[in-house]
Amino acid sequence: MSDGGVGPASNLGRRGGSGRPRRGRTARPYPAPDRGASGSDVALAAVRALVHAEDPHAVRQVVATLVGDLGGALVPARLEPRNAIEVDVSLGLGDPTLVVVDALSVAALDLRSVLPAVLDDARAVLARMAREGEPPPPAGGTGPAAPQDLQRHLELVTVGDVDGARRHTLGLLRRGVSRGAVVEQVLAPAQREVGDRWYRGAWSVADEHAATAVTEACLGALPLATEGPSLLLVSPEGEWHSLPSRMAAVAADGVRARALGPGLPASHLQRYLEVHDPEVLALSCTMATNLISAARSIAAAQLAGVPVIAGGRAFGGDDRRAAALGADAWAGSAAELGRVVPISGEPPLDVPHEAVLADAVADELLQLVLERQAAATGWVREMDRRQQREALQDLRWITRHAAAALACDDPTVLDELLHWLDVLLTDRGVPAHVLPDATGYLADALEVETPQVAELVRTGGARLR
Ligand code: B12
Image 1: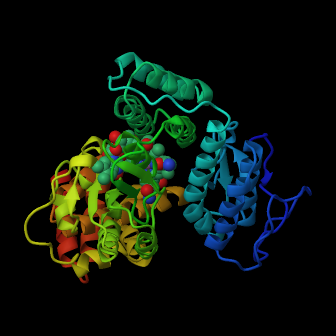
Image 2: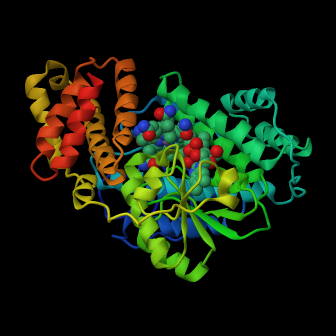
Image 3: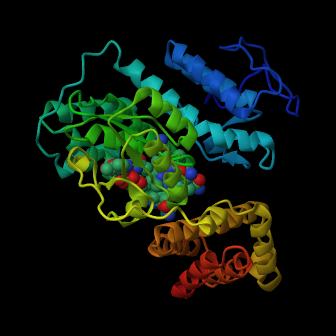
């Protein structure tokens, strides 16, 4: 997969006949999906094949075949390809590798939506393979980790040493460090540092992915608690960050926690809970853009009769956002999962209709905002296509964070994003007035259908100035 060449990921079975020529002829590892199959059907076929993969090579083959089936091509990240989807598909088994696809095609949409979940499954299969044939992992003790343990893990993460990092992690357990401390004092702070390096522009997306793959392998090597009430950790639809919930599952105390991977549509969650029936559902949300989706997951779980504890970055530092979205409880860390305090008081009203509307803001409206800003601002007029795409993405995030702020009755949801964007854009050389100006144009455009969301955007932008 990372053998240097630029070309289609697999040679057979592309759907629907749009475009790229096939090259080479080696056997595909699983039957080709039907012509015209949807992106999720194609992904499902790959996930089924992953379950039967017998070695890491076969796992790589499945991922490469999926990319080819969906119309993408694999290119080594070091070539810095244009039109690349910024997800490393090397699975830590070679040099970082990106998927190249026509940015405006259906193939790009399909790949962006299915790749994170399939890669997650592929990593879980690789972690299982790594564990098989090994003695069971040490159970760990009750002790803390030392600052140099984090330092060492960061060094291994930085050079992408998967095996070294797994050995180091298991060594900590052997030394008597608790599972919770390995997660909270070593793996989690290292991942935050990885995120900060990307945010500061010191690391590329591919560096970040390669480092994350190392941490994922370490996490996969850790044992889970086998006693206590059963607790299922899931994330709402749209949430690609599955590591936080996996970390919480390992660090949880006094509960038998299992994590189900990245975001799940609420209807699928409800069906799953009706069959599997855990005692508690813990909902992990990292991006505040997914808070309205989180409200749907909470409602779905409660309809299935399962109480919900909310947690993760997006829920903030106290129970207010969780309460507003209808959760039964909030916990600030995985260690608290076994002894949470239920949220008291009246159940909240439904998520306001305006927030739901703004959460699904139309591309055309955002495009209009960008055009109005371009008419007034030279810098915006001169943006290239990639910058325009990113600007549209930023406008969508601002709108969806404002929608979440309305649903949670908490303007800091939007303030946190605006501050984050302000620093990021300034570092990337965007003039300081562009972001506050954008909030003004966006608020004007949102005014007609979603006046309260518009007001949040306007006042949030004013606080930036
Ligand atoms: C790895 C990573 C990714 C990977 C995720 C891989 C995976 N399998 O999870 C990928 C590449 C998919 C990704 C994508 C994106 N990411 Co990202 N990502 C990260 C990174 C570096 C680490 C995530 C991680 O491992 N966290 C694990 C620990 C460290 O996180 P944690 O959330 O604090 O979780 C702990 C607790 O909160 C708690 N917990 C978690 N859940 C729950 C639940 C309950 C009930 C309880 C009690 C506790 C609990 O336990 C955990 C262990 O302590 C973070 C940096 C960071 N600070 O987290 C950025 C970060 C979260 N990502 C960010 C961004 C911007 C993105 C993208 C938008 C990038 C893009 N341009 O596409 C997309 C969004 C995708 C989406 N729609 O979800 C930003 C978010 C900024 C913001 N304003 O919100 C961050 C903060 C990076 C940064 N410094 O700016 N990302």
